[in-house]
Length: 86
Image (cartoon, rainbow, N blue to C red; front, side):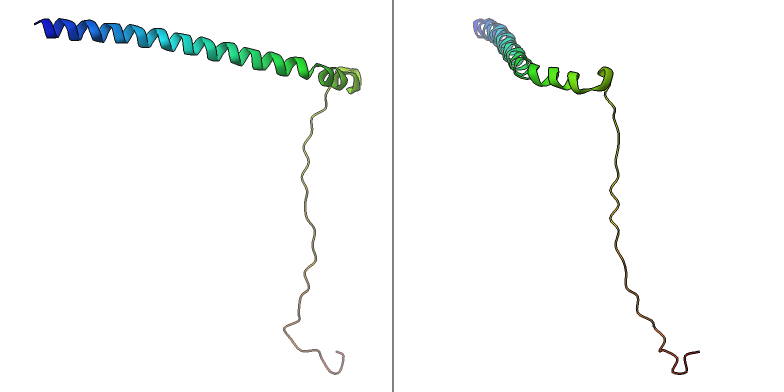
């Protein structure tokens, strides 16, 4: 009976410690993600400002282009030429 209580208590403690560890890890990941986003936002502010100044009336025109490769095919006549030119 004592082993069962000890196993239950050990399992509960490990479950609580695992939950606390996962909360700490998720918080650290969230802080690092926010710091990374803030760093990129800060470093690209001049670029974003320049892009806004270049756009006509603050509008951005999106478009799509398709490149079609052109090529010529030489064909060979299957029939021989007419010697009389007819």
